[in-house]
Image 1: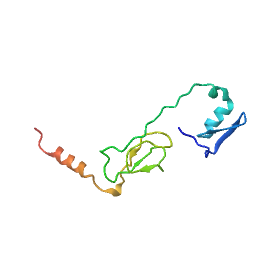
Image 2: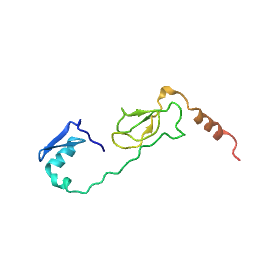
Image 3: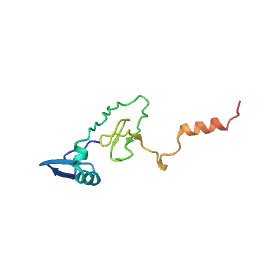
Image 4: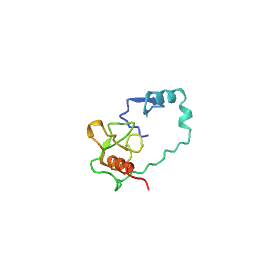
Length: 111
């Protein structure tokens, strides 16, 4: 997770500001800063995903945790690193033509 200096959750430790993603993380750090400062933590590097050829025209992809993140191709959420998922259809969109083809195929005679 990337935390920036714009985070409202921060405290000063040994004269330096330390920023957090949420109040809970800030409280945990404040209770035992040495536990976190001496830990050898490595953050995984998440490669930026490029759009794939199978992205359907007009599909909007969003993060399940950050619904304000929206883009026209698959990828990774810049806030949390989760994979973006296609936005779910709404009732106003009407019937999916692929689903109708599938129903017709299932209703036909079986070999």
